[in-house]
Amino acid sequence: MQIFFEVVLPVILVFTLGFVIQKWKQVDIKPVSTVAIYVMTPCLVFETIYHATLDMQYVYMLIFAFTLLFSLVLINKIIAFFFRLSPETETGIILSTSFMNVGNYGTPIVLFAFGEEGFAYGVSLMVIQSVIMNSFGVYFASKASGNMRQALKTVLTMPATWALIAALLAKLIAYEMPMAVTGVTEIVGAATIPTVMIILGMQLANIPLQGFEWGKISYSAVVRLLVSPLIAVGITSVLPVDPLLAQVLILTAAMPSAANIVIFAVQFNAQPRLVSSTTFVTTLLSILTVTVLLMVL
Image (cartoon, rainbow, N blue to C red; front, side, top):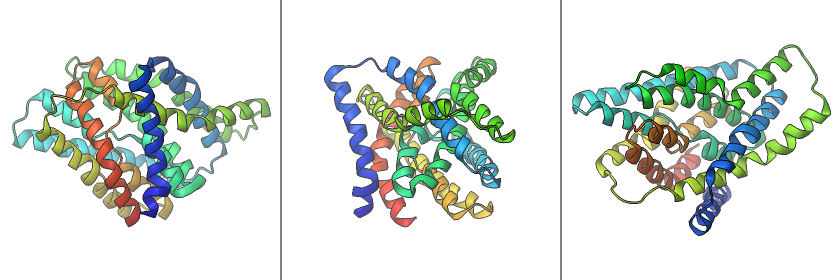
């Protein structure tokens, strides 16, 4: 119970603040999320990567992220084949299970559980997941139109991508950034995590709570919250990853469905009700599953 009160509960309470304020005031989320995506997150990414000691662990992190993604997609395609699911349903369960909420949920949990050292890994994984969601997520959501060009365009227009590139270049050429720049990234970056947590609570408040397809949601919840971390255990046992990084990777693999993937589902009409309801249910269930996993780790 100590883990729940010290790690999980503070995060849930921040989500609850966003949920309550949205139910009460019906705030327009778009301007807030725009600031978080285009200003705050890039500052956090740059600040973290610029001060991180980059080594082979980050390469293993990249290998892990893509291996986990393709493993989950393969599982869903096998299930869809044997149960003769429609292409639309297959897309819905892929979106619901293959993309986890590392940014709004996973990174704060990692910070509370593993401190600043684990947090550096968590932010780096958040960037990788952001690129994956804005490429493969858009691809799967829009694959009926074969709109891979839009997926690539989305990745290239994400400021976090360019913040990552800028930080890597600065480290590569050993350029010392001016204090004026690092001061801004430090201040703004520090406000990013609580802001995106509140935004998640607000997004959950806008999900309609009716018409749930419980069979599909139950399957998606099992894959997202139980199968995914088990696959992560297998991957980390093969890769020569640092023990702390292994714990971070397994923990983030157990996060609920990504809230941002709902936006793509709505935009491309890719089973938006299934994806949004799965996001809501897995977020609630994760309070229990993440607590248990933290006890195991």
